[in-house]
Image (cartoon, rainbow, N blue to C red; front, side):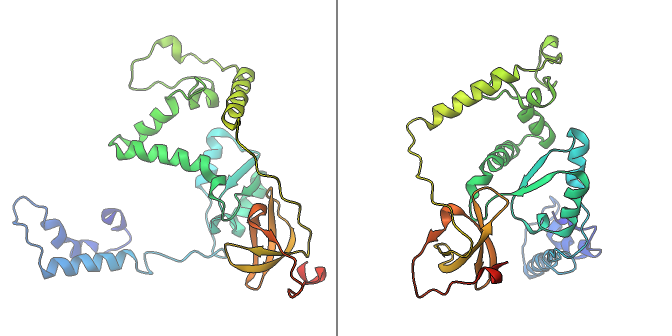
Length: 266
């Protein structure tokens, strides 16, 4: 990482030389005060304001990574992301409008909503930690058959990828899976995993102006409206408005709590 940051720190080599010399076979290992000072200076430079800038939604941002994905696979109808500030910025809102997709964020304080993405990231990280070359590891993930019998590449582009593993030429011919049968098997597998699981009784819908208790924040709030995301509400608190999942909100019937007029909540 220090070598990568060198392009942004013009005098980096002058105070990392003492650290690099420790790993030379020609020198005897001796980590004294000069080396300690050089290491501390390197840590300070890596976290300095001229290298790292605090994110601001008002700052002009260039959205390029997502557009590069769209150029390969086309523009999706719906894009789901977490609640990072970069996704609530004005440039990203303009970006979603120009490309014509609906942007939906996962529920705040509900990590289960992002579980599928987290599992995919964890799978790739395990391969990288195993010492595999990064691009080959990604290719192996895309070419490995899933429980359904098809690999991600077959489901996405209709053919198997050619990898470093010996394969029959016929297996590389384009051939779309039986999508109807695939979806049917996926539905049966999903139902099998939920068999015997007791579902929680759905909570009653909340109404605008209704007082609720936020157990995580340990404070009261007032319902403003249901959010665009499913099963989430916009809550007015003494520190501003927040979005929370319905199951994290508890209704209260306390006459001592002042109810805000609907005109104030709008």
